[in-house]
Amino acid sequence: MGSKVSAAPTLAVIRRRLAKPRPTRDPRAQLLANLEGAASPAFIEMLDRPGRPASVLLALLERPSGFTVLLTERAAHLRDHAGQVSLPGGRLVAGETPTLAALREAEEEIGLPAATVAVLGSLDVLLTGTGFAITPVVGLVAGDEFAPTPDPREVASVFEVPLDLILDPGSISVAYLERLGSRFKTYELRHDQHRIWGATAAILWNFREVILDEES
Image (tube, rainbow, N blue to C red; front, side, top):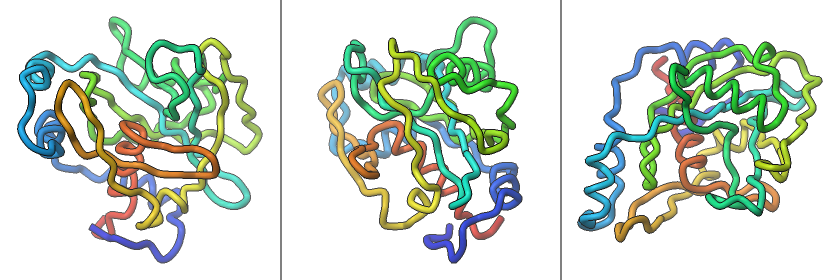
């Protein structure tokens, strides 16, 4: 796995590396591997339950300065994860695929028309400490004219992070979370005044792993 990229990847490279077959990772085994110390009974009980299916859209925009990734800041009044940075997304409804759910949620949350997104692939399913099994869907937003219209019921603001920053080996650091009486490793990224951490940072870490795979 490469640790450094000498130039920003082209769209063709991004497409190729997302399309390359990868070994399937067991999301439960991944979460257990990130535990610090023994798992609590409550944590083991959560692992024994089926993950609640969800998906997010990792939307790439091609700007004059290079590719960016679209992120949201959740509204402060929300019951769960208020004020946190996230990728557009949410739970799957009955009969939905992860791709359809990610596109639907992005349109509802930030006004991104599904018809303007070309799906490039997906990343590893991520099991969170709260029991969600998240499928990250990667898509390219057509053109350079998209202007978000966030739904204030869910989203406080929308911003973009340069892809170069995400691919910088020193940009994403290790962090730790406490859930259900257990402590486990995750990741953290800072951009301007934003702290990007938890599941969102872990997804960006996985995206970087895939895109910097110099063997593909």
